[in-house]
Structure formats: structure tokens, C-alpha cells
Length: 204
Length: 204
Image 1 (cartoon, chains in turn yellow, red):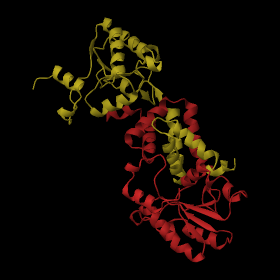
Image 2: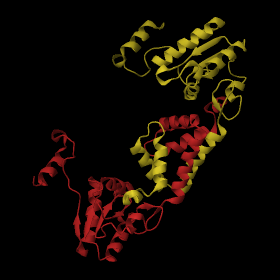
Image 3: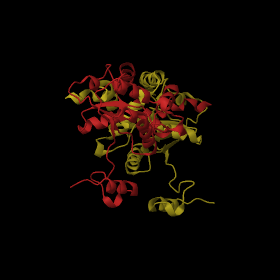
């Protein structure tokens, strides 16, 4: 086809294809990003490319909590000022960051790296559930496990599975409160959230 | 702060910052993309980084039409099968691609690389308008200029400016038809589009 060269050729469509592989980036956005990069100063584009390489080369998983880190074990696991008796179990490394920003949890973490999802072919063995069990068996200090998976169907199912697995150990197992989001409107809350908020009502 | 290490440290936040600089990517999306990249196989991430570098190293602007290309002059300008008597003036290299996909234009292009926008401090001299004038003066073959800037305020103003500049050359100047988008609903068309469609009605 004589039209083949019209896109400015291979490097352009190749970059658009690469962007298109990222989540939430469709073909149109991929193309827009590609053309933005073409117009970008070279050093800025190079800086993005280098940041991608750096993340892949330097970021590993902590072999204790499976959070992402540059050093193993990670800063949180080795921090003696943190409460070693509490472990908060989350789905993703991003959740650790979200919790850290609140500054309301001073314990340790355990990142599952996903949820049990038969639909997507993800079973318990694909997650870091067994390492959690081993960790708890080998560490008698732990007094509380907070199961902080997402409050949706898959998150709940995963928490139930983990709960069943670790309850024989006799450790206290809790989960974050369900209720009205702060700053929200009562009339806009969905039924389930509202009923959970009433059921779990707290003393004023 | 002892929480500093919780994000998995510098490379993670650096990559999130880099993604955040791209258009349409806010801090949340940047973070999501970063964590996606961390989970990605290393070769895929490397492939993205390399595609970024390749685009910056290999893509240049054609010195005739200012479209993006790997060779100068570009494939379109040097293609003898294309109609050398028609030049379609567009805002961006992306527009060339969109027009090429239609296969309904077989002439040449001229990419302005933007629109006149006093609000954003973009004047005629920031665009490739004068090179177009020089090109037309030096090329007596050209019989038609199609001003295909975007059908919005800034695009129209830019076309008006270019029109004024090149009309003394006595070349026929046209623009794409305004009218109802194919597949659209008449009742949902905005007033301006509908009135343009009626004004420019064509024989059945």
C-alpha cells in the first residue's frame, strides 16, 4: 500500500501499540500520547523511558510482606518503631500507600497481590496467601490481623478464604468498618452501605 | 519521616511523576500505570521504554510538508502516484493519519503544527504558515488548497488567516463540507451543524 508511510512509519505505530497495552489507554489515547511524545523535548521523553527502566531494575518484592521495595526486607518490615503485633492484609501495593497516607495504621502489612477470582482464573495459590500463613506460624508476636481487602464481592470472598485459613491460629481477626463515606450525603448512599452503616452504628 | 519508604521509594514516585506529565493522565492514573508497570514482565516494560527512545531518535519533520517521518522528504511528498496539484492543510500530523485512513484524498499535505491562539500565546509565526506560502510560490503545479483545520473557533480563525495570505496567489481554496455526521441523528445535531447542513445541501 502506498499509504503505509503516512503514519510517519514504524516507530510511531510501535509506540502507539505499546501505550495501547497499558490499562485504561485505548487506541485513540495511545495515539494522542504518541504524538505528544513526538513534540516533547527529547530529554523529557528520555527521562520517562529511564524512569520505566529504573522501576523494573530497582523495584523488588519484600520477601516478608510482599510490598514493593528497593531493599529486602522493606523499610516497613525493618522499622522497629512500627507495631509488630498487627498485620494489615491488603490486595495491592497501592493499598499500602493509601493506608500509609492516612497515618492511622502503625503496624505491618501483607500484600496478597490480587484477589481470588475464578472468573479470571485466579485461585488462592496465585496469591501470597500461603506465605502469610507461614509468616504467622513463624511469628508468635502477632496479635491482630486486619483483613483490608476491597469491600466488593471478590475482596470479601478473598477475606473469607483467608479468615477461614488463619482462624485456627487463634489470632484476633478484624476488618475496616463499613459505613457512610465521610463528606458523603446520606440520601445518596447505596442501600447496602446505608444498612451496613446502621448495623455497625457507633456510640456518639 | 519513617513513612517515607512505604511507596517502595524513589523509582516508583519518579515514574508516577513522569506519567503525570502526559496529557490526560492525572496523579491517580499515573500511579495506577506505575503499579501496572511494576507487575508487567520486564521485557514488555523495556519494549515500551525503547519505543519512546526510538520515536525521539528516528522521527523528524519532513522539510516540505512538515509531517512526521523517518526519511526526508517524506513518503507522501516523494510518492509520484499522488496528486501533486492538491495540498491539504491540517493542524496536526494526527490529522494526516485520519485523512489517509479515509483513502479519499490522494494529494499532498501541509502540517501547520497548531492553530493561531492568542489566548495560549500562539501567533502565526509559531506555526508552519510561512513555509506553506514559500512552498506555494515555488511550486507552480498546485491548483487547489484544502484548508482542513478543525471546525472550531481557533481552527476557523487559522483557516481565515491562511486564506487571506494565499488568496493573492490565485489558487483555488476549498474546505471540507460542514454537515450532519454520517450515522448521527438529525434531532441530536447541534443548531450550527444543522444550519450548515441545510445551507450546504447537495443534490440527491
